[in-house]
Length: 107
Image 1 (cartoon, rainbow, N blue to C red):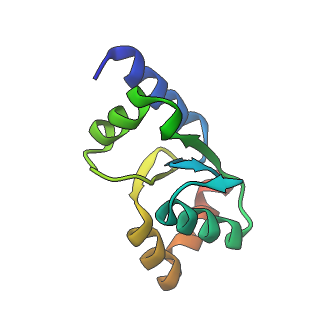
Image 2 (image 1 turned 30 degrees about the vertical axis):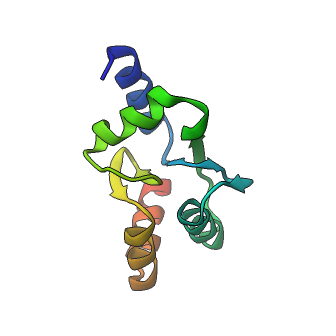
């Protein structure tokens, strides 16, 4: 991955407590999996930022290398890679996601 792409990803992940790399944005998700993640975070009522990977091919490919995770969306909380849609659903249903988010926003 080009160093400038890694630097951009580092900055996005570190500068935002909850960062979602997705297809579309939080106002207009462009795939069902991205929409699932947005709906979960909206239901928690927490602030989060999104990056539309469809707008930037370098970011779209780079984030897959960055996380060693092949699919989009990808969620980071407090700089930690959490996972994609399925993992977010599991964490939400178990109550773990709420705990992670509370800790992140309190720090």
